[in-house]
Every structure is written in structure tokens, then in C-alpha cells.
Amino acid sequence: MKIKNKEIKTEKVNKMKNEAITLIALVITIIILLILAGVTINIIIGKGSLIEKAGKATDSYSEQSAREKLEIALGKLQTDKYIDKKYNKNEYIDNELAKQEMVVVDNIVIVDDWKFEIDRDVPKIVTSLGKGEQNKEIVIQANVNIREDYVKANLETLIKYEGTIEQIIIKGEVVQVPEKVEGIYALNKEITENGTYTIYAKDEDGNYKIAQIKITDITEDMDIWNRQDLEIFRNKVNEGRTFEGRTARVMADIDLEGTQENQWVPIGNYIENEKLVFKGTFEGNNHVIDNVYINSTNNYQGIFGCVDNAKITGIVTGKNNSIIGNAYVGGIVAYAKNNSVISNCGNNGIVNNNIKMVAGGIVGFCINTQITGTYNKGNITGGTWVGGIVGQNDIENDSGSTVKYSYNLGNITGTYYVGGIIGRFRRLYGML
Image (cartoon, rainbow, N blue to C red):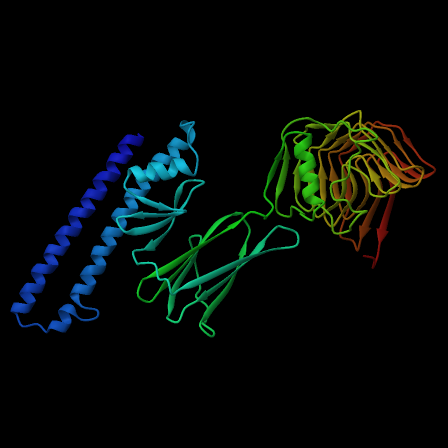
């Protein structure tokens, strides 16, 4: 089927070539007849003339032909990506396109003088860049500012040119040309994904300038296969990456090999900095995270220190887990807030708050959090506000906070405000 599709595309390209040649011959014949008939030369060769329109039509056929050639080559590469062990998105692509007599410069491919930007990851055509020549007088300066939480970035672009810029394309997206101020076109673009961004500026004569900038620091989704991966993920969060809008997935059971000398530092180390919180989605996929060891005099101790408007699903803790902290201690999350959702999680380890306040098998302390489908089988020990699922559960301004379809089979020990599911349930009014 692939070969047949390729043959069809080749026939289509040849057909287009023949049509273009036929059109040119027809236009020339018409022009000769018009001249013989005494039609003014301006109509034939002036601005908006028949020759200009014929040239545009010919260019359109020529560009489409070049595009078809590149699409055929990229279609083959899409297949090679899955069947050829030598495939990679760099040298392999360059070599294969070069065999088709195409010129490759970074992400730009030149086919019959027509230039196209490609996405090497797919691979596919991103956009057509026309047929003009590089204009050295156009100067493009680009700078990237990563947002504090590493979720997005701002691409600042300055284009200096005495003439007129008619079109700007950034990674295949046509952007509005800003007003020129003192010879400079300044624009900002929000970026949400890493990659190489090609900035293309075309002047009124069809000539252009290309600049490229690589963005690598935006947080991306992450698969977690082992202890090292989980530690890398934890460190990213504790460097300020909230993972808002991103997903981390546990792909296998994980042994953290915790000891007194190798204690776990919570993901979202809230006690160190209240800005260090997790805001994304964490999918445990019912894999066991075992041998988590914490023996600390600090507050907010758990696998997660603090989650904020986050979604935590499918985490199962092992029987060898031991989490001991001061106050606000949880088997999975120490502190959950702002419409966080915690579902289908189970704790089998020990949780202890050193006879202080707030300890829970799943969550130590939560505000406006939805907890559903959870269980606790571990022993939970504390002073005040101790629960099998949640130590303290607060509702703020009637925004809602629930614990549903959850059960406890562990021993719950405390001095007062002790419950099998919730140690203390409190409604707050006018409090932050």
C-alpha cells in the first residue's frame, strides 16, 4: 500500500509539471496574439499584468510540486522511523533527503529552490518559506525567558530592518507583524513546549532571514521507572518546577531503599519553601513505592510535602514504609490544598507525628480536597488530629472537601481528635 501511494503521488507531481508547461505555452501564445491585436504593453507586462499573473500561477505549480516531492520523502522517513534500527532524527534524515537532491540546513529543506521548515520528530512539513534569497540586512535577535515555575516561556524577538517586513513565521505559525518602532519590529510569543524554534521574516520583495533558537528548560511530562527517576522528578519539583499542566507516570514498582542515612526528602519540600509545591498530575498506576524512610523533626513529611490543585492517583505504599515527622505527616501527602484530587491510593506503611498534631494514612492535612477510593492498612500514631485516611480535613468558605469510598484497617492511636477515617473535620469561614 505504501508503494502504491508513492506511485500515485509521483504521477500527481508529473501531472502538475505537465500542466504548468501547458499553461506557460498557452500564456505565451495569448500574449503574442494580444500584441498582434494591438493590446497595450502595460496590460501584458505591467504590474498586475498577464505575465505577472502567469508567473504567479507557474510559481504556485512549482511550489506544490516541490512540496509533493518533500512529502513523499518524509512519508518514507515516517516508515523508516519504526522499521530501521539505524534511524535517528538527525544524520539519518539529512542523508535520506540528500539522496533526493534536497539541501538540508538545520530544520530547513530546499527542494527545487523552494524552502520548507520540517519537524524532525514526526517528521513532517511545518510550513513553506517561499523561494526568496537570504537578506543579510534583516537582523533577528531572539531571547527566551523561562517562567518561574518552568511551565511556560516567553520568546522575545527583535527584527531590525530599514525596509518593510511583510510576514513573520515562528515554528510554522504565522504571527501578526507588529508596528515598526525606530526600525525595529518587537514581538513576544508564549511558548509551552521545548524544541527548536525557527523564526522567519520575509520582506516586501520576497527575500527573507531565518534565525533559530533552541528551548530546553520547559517542564515536560515524565515517565518514572525506578528510584533514580523518582529522585530526579522530586528534585525538579524542589527546584521550583510545579509540573502544572504536566503528568508524571509511575511505570514500575519502586524500591527507594530508605535508611537513616538515606532518608526521603518530600516532593514539594514545603517546610523549606512554601513555593515548592506540586501542581500537576501524578499517576501511580497502582505500582508500589516501598522502603520510603523519613525520621525527621520537621513538619510536612510524606512522599509529597505539599500538593496544590493537583491530581494524585493510583499510588500504593509498601509495608516497609516508615514516615515519622513533627506535624502534618501523611503516608502519601503531608498537605493538600486548593481543589486537589487524591484517588485510588493505598497506604500500607507506618505514619507517626511524634505525638504532635495532624497525621493521616493517606493525607496529613487537607483543605478543599476531594479524596475518593482510598484505603489505609498501616499503623498511624500521633498526638492530636489523627485519622486512618486524613488527620485534619478543612472546608473553606463552603467550597467543598470530601472523603468518599474509603476505608481503614490499620491501628489508629492518638490523644484526642482520633478517627478511623478522619481525625478532625472543620469548617472554616473567612480564612485563607
